Image (cartoon, rainbow, N blue to C red; front, side, top):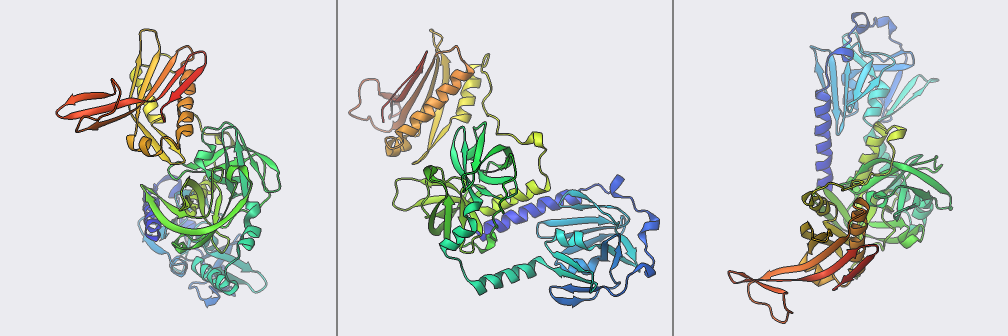
Length: 514
């Protein structure tokens, strides 16, 4: 898993670097005013002490303060923060990179670029005694350092991200791991229940008005509410940010939540076998607590998952998975039912943390916050049979069940002599044989949903949906009724029969063979 996250971080770093390197060095970005490039030595303020990671540090030339902004020598501060720096003499530009973060500055310009975003400076970058002086707080914040100023002692204290992480590790080792009860006491109020007009799930508070959940909890809904642990109900305005591939969404509430957000764990410290505590609302039982392990780490395409054995169920989706220090390591996303192995899955919190960082860097306008729009059109009037077939195959080509995913292929759409729209599809034969009976109710709901959406888009058309079991064998199958077995030639025989038959006239009728 660490390797997977390292690849992800490297990919982000490459993308970020490409954005910054391509930043135009013209116009507002290149405004080097000759008079502002060099500050007289006498403007330097003596007596400023600097402590980096609790150790004295000497800058040469000394720091300069102007309008409350402290400027320090470029190469020394970037080196102290562990960043790589590149100086471009032709444009008097500075590029510094550390991990996924990049900062671009230019002598004489009041504009910086931090990870692709323009940031205005109160004091421009300037040259002092031949050294390029950059704003300390800006570069420190960009690379995760904490900078404080003590006016009485005229001392600047800088704590690098690595130093603070080391202190945090020492504190963890000193005070030890938390009990499940302590983890609950720390985080119970930070986990909420989400109720929409379409579903019930869970969520995790990650901001003053932001709640993290699974995308599938909010998808298909037009309204919803967050229910706090004390029973307070707060409306949801819509989705502020989403990552559909990772099944994550951050929703924005109608008013502030008044609760401190969760703390994210360092993904590189998460290991198979770690103990976890899950909090969510399975079947609507709000903020239910369960305990378990990270039992495996799974890669599915571009997304990785933690396999967990903490008991969860429907309604737990979007809930929190905490480590033994009370930090968020994952978001509950899926379960496999009717097994003794407790096969449950969580999306690593790293994906959510990256999504939150993007949201904080570029929050949407109020009118951009809304519930996901339907992927289906308002009407299919005038659509061809082939267009309808393509739409159904794309949007209804699979059904999520408690036993896994049922896949439907070989879609056909035709209109018969009576004007009926006749739709057929073939269910995956292995899924049908192994799980059809146990998933019958969920497959009926899939069929009913398909028929009701079709009727909404074609309100004056009678509908017929037939789902078949179909499989080809290299010998003639025995024991089937007339019309079920077809000789295809070349020693191949096809077995095909109805699994489900739905009709929608003035009302709906459905029969099945599970």
